[in-house]
Length: 203
Image 1 (cartoon, rainbow, N blue to C red):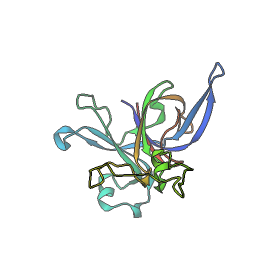
Image 2 (image 1 turned 135 degrees about the vertical axis):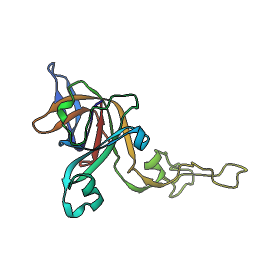
Image 3 (image 1 turned 90 degrees about the vertical axis):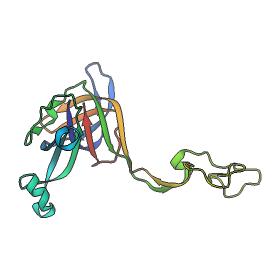
């Protein structure tokens, strides 16, 4: 199992040997340090905890400084490992983009763009009300939320509200190229989030 933590840089395109163009997302994955190992016997599950981008000591809790040997990290995450899988990582190991190769199938997770409070047209693609026949100022309204004899609004009714800012996982992506010198991974297609979003890649 391959895994690494990085940040989204931007989107671009790459050309292959035959001249075909492929849209890709560039992810910068600085070396990840294994900061902890979770085991079934002690924690109830198996996982590897990694950290990247060292944090100032003054901004790290004393408990974390003790756990991580006097260091702190801005970005941290756990990667679950199957209970029957062989755990090859050890505390202090370094994970780099070189563990990934061109053609690897990966699953990418990140936080989608937060867009604040939005109406139903933008949030759920409602078509809005009619533009004629006596209608006025109802182009982007949700319409009726009743249901005949019901005396309440049912749970799950699609209405205006906060949009985005959710954890989104995209499966079925592929590694198009790896730039080990600059710690970059080029992944086919789009991945969630804005520039600078923390991205986890699992292969």
